[in-house]
Length: 206
Image 1 (cartoon, rainbow, N blue to C red):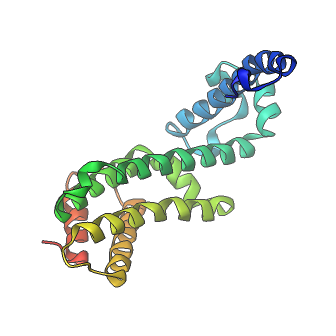
Image 2 (image 1 turned 90 degrees about the horizontal axis):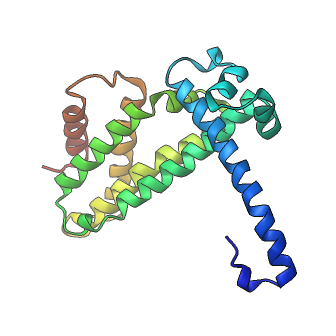
């Protein structure tokens, strides 16, 4: 938010009046996006109607059409918000101070747990994105981030400066693990152990 002390007195009055309206607009937008995401957890995209989304958000269908054009526009906005928030969460995980002294196996274990939980929690949104050609590049960029973070952390944790080829191997292995999570049953109780073991063997970490 702009500090009113940095503006001319006459201009600051306009900013003060406009801010509540902008806040309401953001709240309306978020309410519609939240309603859509909650419904997506309950049923397929094709079975979700505009009126139902608006009703879940406590708004009118006109509010949805006015901000997103149609359900398709709302879905694209939901994809974008999800990608931005997920990327921020991933980067925050990778920046934790604990990784500076962690062993490679500890890093892989935590990464695997996070990846499994992420795919379980957001399976409906991820499935919708992976099958949407208009957001394919955005999806690939998002899912390419966790492997790069893991590669960076393991590069620093493995003794002897393993080099560029090692980072490429880690990225490939992590991407392969994510591909398994994208396509296979996530309710398997042994999934975490299997993915962790798969990564350790492909990367060469005991």
